[in-house]
Image (cartoon, rainbow, N blue to C red; front, side):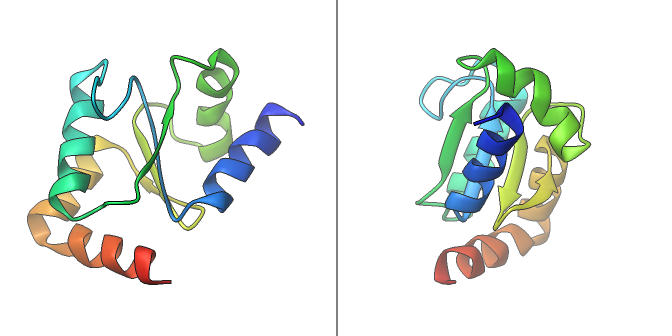
Length: 106
């Protein structure tokens, strides 16, 4: 399976996927940490984390797959939502909680 197929499989197999540096318990950058905290605050219980530091192929190719250059990257039902700034904006507006609940309910 090619790396692009593996990425596609990840985003299609889980309703909520966060590609980040590190893990939810041990984020390796402040942006990843803030994105995880925002998602948890919004009620994302079934958040699937992909640590891009453990897979150099995914780290190198995800920006090409998503057309988004930075990490973290949040996908909901296979669609790129965005990075840390967008996740935080959605949390502040109250939209992130609604989006997360709808994603898990489907």
